Structure formats: structure tokens, C-alpha cells
Length: 141
Image (cartoon, rainbow, N blue to C red; front, side):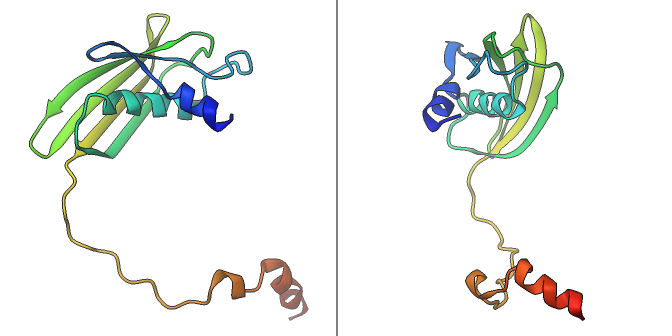
């Protein structure tokens, strides 16, 4: 899939306040919808209902195979809008049945503790021998 097709596939049409429609690319080329596509479209539908927050947790459930020749309707449930966290549930629907569920939590961007330690000194990737060079020596030993 080229970049332009990907961008077009990820464009959702707003049908109502919490209702969106998406389509699949190359609908004649596959039997089923690619799972990553429905995840991305569901997350984008959720983001359409959230302001100034970043998704930090995501859970996905594939329920039925999706039909690439039929548009997908994304129904967003605004579960909770809190002070720091926002929760959304998205149901992807085709032929009147759920094909996919997504639960996402969004958080206000905040400063926090730094838990990561500094990377130790190491040689650059371009100075390290390739496995193909090392393997013959190891076999001789």
C-alpha cells in the first residue's frame, strides 16, 4: 500500500457526534480486513472525541472477520472524561454486527519521574563485526 492510499484509508467520515465511517483499501485484493487497519481507524475515531490528551493504554478484541468491500461504522462511547484521564470504547460494526472492540485510555501530558538509566558506553554499530564474519571463527574454535 502506498503512502497516499494509506492516508486516504485512515480518513474517517463523521456521521454524527460519536459515529464515524471508514473504508478499506484494495477491497478486491483481500478476503478480510487487515487487523492493523481497523485498530488504527478505531483509535483515530476515539481521538476525534478527545482533546489535548495522549493515548497511553490500548486494548483490542477481534470478534469477527471484517469484509473489505463494506464500509466500517465506528461507534465511540465516551465512557469518562476526568481531570487527568479520559476513557473511550469504540465498537467497529459491519452488517449490523460487531467485528472489533477497542478500549483506550488517554492522559493529560505531565512531567514525571525519569526511571531510565543512561545507556552504557558501547562501540558504534558500524564498527562491530557482522555475524557472517564472526561465525566462521567460532566454528574453528
